[in-house]
Length: 144
Image 1 (tube, rainbow, N blue to C red):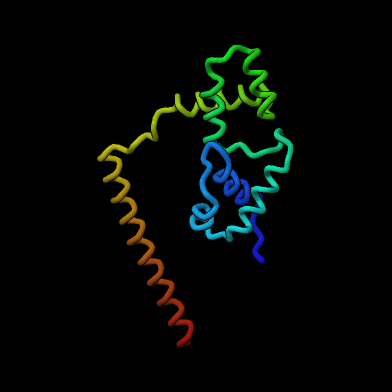
Image 2 (cartoon, rainbow, N blue to C red; image 1 turned 60 degrees about the vertical axis):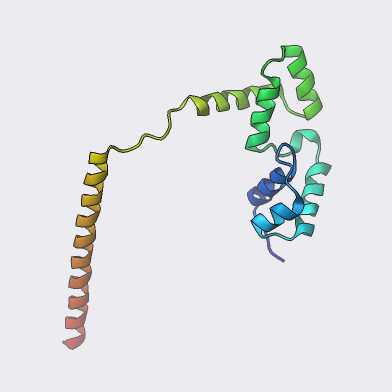
C-alpha cells in the first residue's frame, strides 16, 4: 500500500470536487491512483466541516468571481454557506489581482540569448578540459 503526501491527496481531491468535478476514473488515470483510493479520499474530504475543505486554485478564483458584484451582506451570507471567512475571500481576491497585474515573464532579448548560448558552450568546453585533466591525473596515479 503506497503512502501519499497530503499535498498530493489535496490536489487529487480538488480535481474531484467543484468547480473541476472531474470523474474518478479520469483522475485515477491521470494520477495513477486506484479509483477506490480516490473515492475514499473524496469521502474523507466531504466528511470534514465546510471550513476545513480544500479550495483549489480554480475554486478560489471561481469564488472571487461569484462574489465580485455582491454587497457585504450578500458576501457574508455566501461565505457562511460555503464555510469560508470573508477575510479569506478578500485574501484570495487580492492574490488573484496581484497575479493578473504582474507582466508576463520577461523574455530575454535575442542578443542576450546568443550571449547565454556562447557562455554555456565556453563553460562546457572548460568542463571537458577539466574532466580530461582529472582523468589523466588518475591514470598517472595508477601507473606510479
